[in-house]
Amino acid sequence: MLIQIDHIHFTYPAGVKALDDVSLLIQPGEKVALVGENGSGKSTLARHLNGLLRPQSGSVWIGGWQTTRHSPAKLARRVAYVFQNPDEQLFQQRVWDEVAFGPQNLGFSPEQVRKMVEQALELMGLSASSQLNPRDLGYSGRKRVALASAIAMQTPTLIFDEPTAGLDASEQEQLGKVIASLHQQGKTILIISHDMDFLAENLDRFVLLQRGRIVLDAPAQDFFSQKRVLEACGVISPQITRLSQALKQPSLALSVEQFLDGWE
Amino acid sequence: MAVVEVQGLSYTYPGADSPALKDISFQVEAGQLLAVIGANGAGKSSLCLALAGLIPTLFHGQMQGAVTVCGLDTRQHHPGQFAGRVGLVLQNPANQLSGMRYTVYEEVAFGLENLGTPRQEMPARIENALQQVGLAGLGERSPYTLSGGQQQRLALASILAMQPNVLVLDEPTAMLDPQGSQALFTIIYKLARAGTTVIIAEHHLEWIASFADRVIALAEGSLFLDGAPGEVLSSPRLLQAGIGWLRYTRAAHLGQDRGVWPVNRALPVTLNQAVKGFQTAQLYLPGQEQDHADPD
Image 1 (tube, rainbow over the protein chains, first blue to last red):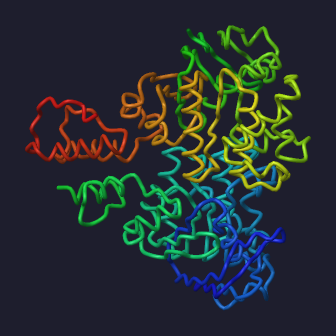
Image 2: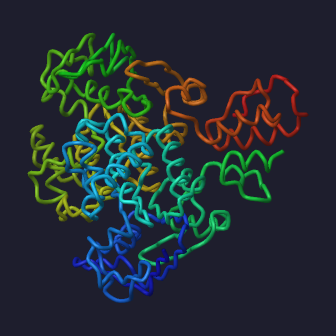
Image 3: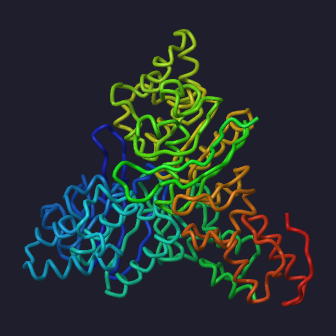
């Protein structure tokens, strides 16, 4: 499903100009990282995609739907959004109910809902926790429930805001596999994050925001070779990319494997 | 002299089947910056609560062993007696903000008022704390109009203003961008050099490798490694514990199999160590196993 953002502006009531003439075209099935300092406009931009925010000028199209003409409830069929803090979105007493809430609201039959929930729980490694109260899980467990709730809706587009924050190394690796699996199903994935190590290993296209404007939009390798722009925008490149740069590898490495292949 | 002494500490939350902390012992000297690492659920947050005396006074449950902070046994003193001596910065700033103050400035004043700090000392301490965390100029804002990262820094400022001898931070960078994280580590590093004992639970291994004096690693409630960052962060036992390695360490380890990193050389935990190590390894033929000096 094509996402088309056309010259949008957005200023918060307090006068903070969060988006200043942003245009972006995302093809179906792309894996896009949205990066930039705190306050650069990443979350504001992402919230325009599911209709939580509406542009004050310009337009946002999700497939053929313009976000200003549809309710967020309807847009939820096409875009699922996972907040940074899971506690902002969890409210059911059981993990199962939490994950089923989205598909039920989209009007799927009980049998379909059951399948969707089971698949999402399985993918997030939560099958054994389905009867627990999300509040009894640790932070990362609640975070996985929030991700499962979004995945269960089987929308063509998924947006994750800081999905790796608070996850440990093995949970991050698991999340990488989930993203690969969603990508294989043809989903469009948009991730807001400061975790460049994770992004470089798992996503293809990088969009950099600074003070509400897109200052760089490039495939991962080209993106991380723009050292001066990245520095000016407070982006610290992935560990392995910095190592690759310091050792002057001709082709910039984005993963440990690429680094070693280029070193031999 | 040890400012923090943990002796045989075990703790089980009320109603829990298994202990969150199992027979943990370590001491921390004044002015040391100690990092605590561990997978989620390994006991990092519980240890932070025990160091601040909230376990066992506020959280009941079963505690064995003893925790002594600034000479006070946590079992025998009320948390109020630790306030001012030990500062705890929680993982989620929303749990830390008082909810009783309308401005950022008053929020930082809250702890000082409770400590009975003389009024004339307060403005300088508040402004200094806000300055340190980069919130100068936001004093008149409501804490609840701040971003998550700013709230996290406000929580830190509120603690810094109290000038504790021991500062305990539980994953304080979770909501910060790289600039915010770097600023935070710079602040705590300076505090440690000035004599404050700092204990920080943190996932981000690169900051730890650069700033910590010492690292302890927890798995399933037990302390299984305790040593210098270079030694602990390159231990293969971190992989089994779900903590993982820095990419530098992983690259060198996999490089051993491919003959691009000498098998008997220490694995790197910083960019500099990795750069020097890979550069000098090139001088030797693959498979050659001479004893090289540590790259640093």
